[in-house]
Image (cartoon, rainbow, N blue to C red; front, side, top):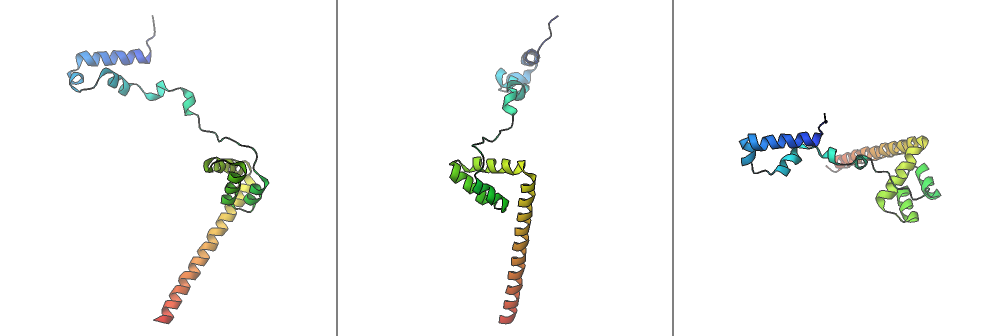
Length: 140
């Protein structure tokens, strides 16, 4: 006894719908539309299409970019990689982020540098608002 496949079962369902359900005849949908709506697109696609994209590595990072990363200057490092390796922005960003992900100490240092920068920006903002309020009070 032969085991029927998913596609054969789908054909049988479409065939029975065609002959036994009057709504199928008047819905204006063709058999291929009916089959397309029943079949899952994942069953047609190969499994290789679902693999995540891996960044293309164009070589090691230049020493100037590594130095910029250790100073906490992520954007400068991406710019240096773009210029020295003559690649696009997304490739340079992927290359730098892969390098940062491979070095946990560097990742924590960049996070600390960014937190310090945010704290400094907040201090300046508070200073400017307080100065503006004080200047407004003196002028009024």
